[in-house]
Amino acid sequence: MEFLSNLTFKASIKEIIDISIVSYVMYHLILLLRGTRAIQLLKGIFVVVITWAVSLWFDLRTLQWMMNQMFTFGVLALIIIFQPELRRALEQLGRGRLFSRSGGEEDQEINGLIGEVMKTMTNLSRRRIGALIVFERETGLNEYIESGTKIDGEVSAELLINLFIPNTPLHDGAVIMRKSRLMAAGCYLPLSENPFISKELGTRHRAAIGMSEVSDAICLVVSEETGQISLALNGLVVRDIKEEALISKLYEELKAKANSKPKAPFWKWRRTNHG
Image 1 (cartoon, rainbow, N blue to C red):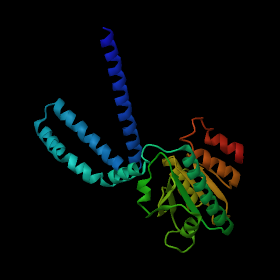
Image 2 (tube, one colour; image 1 turned 30 degrees about the horizontal axis):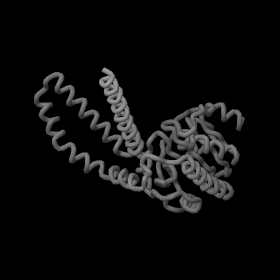
Image 3 (cartoon, rainbow, N blue to C red; image 1 turned 135 degrees about the vertical axis):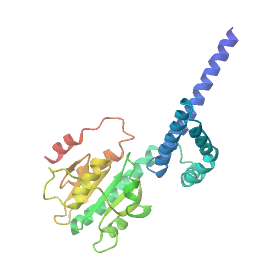
Image 4 (spheres, rainbow, N blue to C red; image 1 turned 180 degrees about the vertical axis):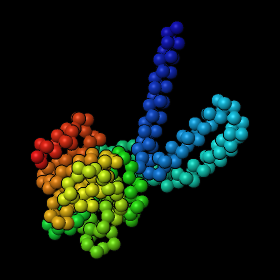
C-alpha cells in the first residue's frame, strides 16, 4: 500500500511538471506570435475547429467531409503559412533568447530606447520639426505598420531625426516602434473623432489621440507650430510635457510588464504633473 501511495504521488508530480512545461512553452509561443499576422490565422483555425465540432454534433456529413479534407492538408499548410514565425522562433531558440531574459538586459534596453527617443524629441522640438512616434505595447499594430514603409531597424536618434526632416519621403506620418525595433515610418493612424478635443490641436495630435483610443499604445508628438512635446495615452493627451516627467512616464509604462505594483490612473498622473 505504501508503494502504491508513493507511486501515485510520483505520478502526480510528473503530471504537474508535464503540464507546467507545456503551459510555459505555449505561453512563450503566444508571446512570440502576438502582434503578427499569425494571430489572425490562429483565429481562423479556431473558427474551423468550431465548425468541425458543430458538424459532428449535428451529423452534417457534407460539412464533415469538407472539414476532414481541410485537416488532411492542414499540417502542411500551417508549416507554409507560419514559416516566418517558425524561422524566427528557431533563431531565437538557437541564441538562447526564446524563454529567458534577464531583468538587467530589459532595463538596459528600455533605458537605451528612451535615451535615443529623448535625444530625438529634444532636437526636433528645438528646431520645431513636427513628429509622431508610437510605441506598441499589448495591442498589436501590424495593421498600421503595414500602411507605412517597413524599416525593422535598430532605434537611433540619428535615424529618427532624419525620418522627420521636412520634404523627405517619410516625414509626413507616424513612426511605430515594437520593443527596441523601429518597425515602420510614414504610417497612417486613425484620427480621433472626440468633439471635445481643443481646436488648437492639429492632425498629428488627433492621430496620436486616435491611436491611443483604439489601442494601449504610447504616442509622442512634437508640434510644428510651438515645438511643444505632447504625450497621448488611453485617449488623453498631456501637452507641453517636461523632460523629467516624460522620461519617468515612458519608463513606467514601458516597464509596466515587469512591475507588479499598480500604476496610478493616467488622469490622476496628468492632473498631478501638468494641471
